Image (cartoon, rainbow, N blue to C red; front, top):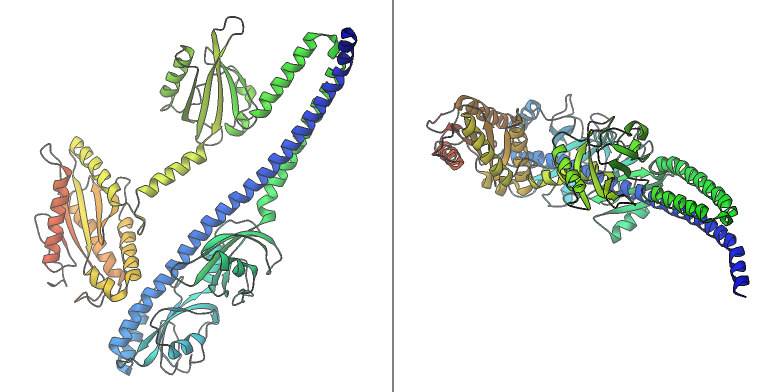
Length: 636
């Protein structure tokens, strides 16, 4: 009976083995299908992240555009309410507008209408005395409501140029508080359309700018303005926004062109605007479909091959233990390759030469595995990182550790270099148990390293202005001071302070104040001509410009360039007399560091010079040790 039972089990064993092979093939195909589905979801999630980042950037761009318009409107309202609408005052305003050189790409035009809608002044050329805008929606709303805020209107066709424009307007009053007219700035719809086309979001992707109540202001895929002004408030998007009002991912079938789209919408926190960045799902998934077909075909071929091999192996199971052992070895090898197919697997001997390299090194390192056999495993490592890796390998070969993990730079065949994370583990001889080499499993970490570097850059920059923050400035000052002390070279510092900035904030509001600080930051950043120069926000309305290897004359020249550039910008500041524009006071200092001094002496000298500039009338530069009275400046 026992012998018969063993015979039955032996007879059934090939069937069990065949069932196992079939189950393994089905499992591999199922896992491959699951992996492809996960890859598809990853592609969609990556596209969602891309659209979220794009929507964030484009929302900031739209806010900056209307913030510029808002600043201009605030200044013009102040001028109109101070000067009035008499013919003489209107002539001055017209001359002022004609003399200003605004960025006509972003702000198309500035217009002033009286209480009846008649055109008083404009930046446009031509005779518009016969035009009247009292029929426009924004004019009627300003006339009916006493609200002094900025109104972003629906898109209209310009009476002066005939193009689609987006209006931003404010009401101004007579001295008794009654309605006196409207000041308006216009932004061409084509400006946003052309700007959105700069971004690569696929052949069927689109970016739309809408008002908060659902009116389309601009759409990237709109050559003739057919979508401008269309009301989308009844679309599923705005029903979704009722549940998630600020931002969110949104999948939908576009009512405009019928495309199935994934998108991310973001509502501006400062203006009644919504940015919708979308990609067509067909564009997002096209590369995945092509690769999935290829990968699934390879897996299917491998599975069929495995099934065929298993069939023949099952037939020969009865030939002995060696055949069974060979089958187990093949299955183990196959599993090892299947599990590590996405990373580079290398076998390295004690002489540090490559004995085996997996096929994935062609994708990650750009080299054919056959070309790497017999070469040094450390040949492609960056020279600066090679000593660290040599030390780790020596410790493994010496038996000091069984495994290690290290991140370093490696040379790519096509690219300049990539970041690689490698897990190392020693291998031992099956006979002597002595260390006979190392197995290295490597993966590309370039994207993760780039993300870490970007996060580090965000930690050293000022959130409002985008230039360096105080912490980064202090670190760089200490470094440049030590370098200047070592080399015996001069180090210069400029401290810059906006004149009467509190009055500016009180007069025009904090949004205008923030715009003023950003404008000054851009001017300072434009003076950073060398890698070692640094522009930073020192605190509040105070900025700093660090100029290594620069003498006093060079420092004075840079400071004067900053002062003149801000005056040329001509931002209105009615309470900053006598210029009535935004100006700055600057204090400069230059030192050649010595052993008896620290970097605080340079800051203190520049700070004293800054206070001297403010005490002597503002709108001037004072270098440490002397006071320069600039032409046209007076004591405050």
